Image (cartoon, rainbow, N blue to C red):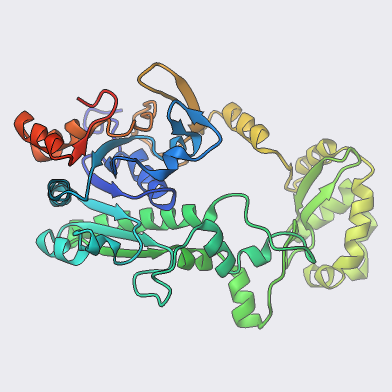
Length: 409
């Protein structure tokens, strides 16, 4: 490492005002915080509602909240007071980025009209995350993860054929929107370096889920079909699916090339299967998949899943055991990739969460900052960003505009 290029975070020095709650917005701003932005989480006196989601808590904060709010600072402001509203508007004037996930029109009703504020501060990047978008005919409808999974067609693809639709086991409706918003914010900041002007970003959770349909949407639009529930199979590749070993353990095989198909046949001791006219190429295997699957299922029932995985991988056929979440986390801890990250709160209590998946060179190897207690940084933020004096801070407190949490001064 040279002195000219010391370790630093790529978003160091950027100020992000986070007016989001629950998941899509906090997930977005956590990505920005992990990349080094100074993210100030603006909360009501009651705090982000996700602080209170059962069943797991550390102190007063839920595990749900702790998973999505590391490396941030918390400012508690009462936007129902004129003084609180003034503070937030002043902070917007100092910010590089504002992120909010109010329902369309709510920010304006609160006195935080994006158009007005951006006109006063043209370098500001403003990102609005909503369920359906700012100009959608459904803009006023409430939206949550499961709502957009249902409306996008994602749930119709999830689960086993002939059974009820199933929600994805991860909150993709929220997290994908948060990721797209983070991508757009970084693009807008890069553009601002050239143009000198910020951008307004409109990200809809439903749009993001539609984008994630990928080839399934193309099959519908181009092929004129209605994609069905996938279960643990692939619409196009019959040797890309799950199987069960004789020990009852499930595993997946993704033999998606001719070479892999031939090696798969060798591993199960059925080399002649590769020469069977019914399975001679990908198209024929797809056409005759209902004949192929029982053959493979019977073969794999003759051995333990882990043994099959080892033999397949050794012969160039991608395969893996289906892990449960604790098993996957144990593997991640052993990988040395830093994906299980410790965080220590002010009481010295340490927890672990899944960490930042973005690995960049010349980045400091610091422990992630524990998600902030409600209002923990209220005084610190108004001093840092706005240079407020002690007397001005006391006036805010007296007016009920700002509260300070544990250790917050």
